[in-house]
Image (tube, rainbow, N blue to C red; front, side, top):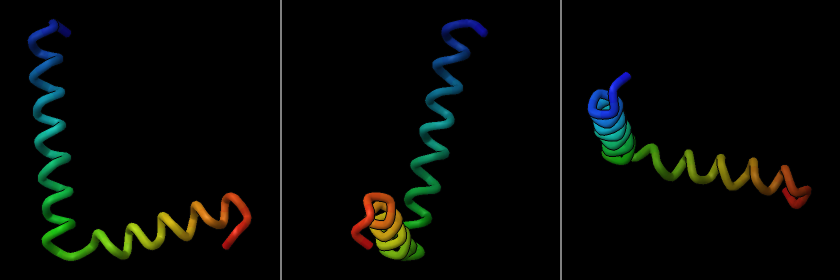
Length: 48
């Protein structure tokens, strides 16, 4: 892949990722995901 094409692919993927994050926040799915992530992290270190 050429440098310009690789950069364009990176930009497109970043835009798609930002759109998915925005849709998740608009659907109010960010807090359940955060709570699950915290619970998993606490279980990994043996606190939860």
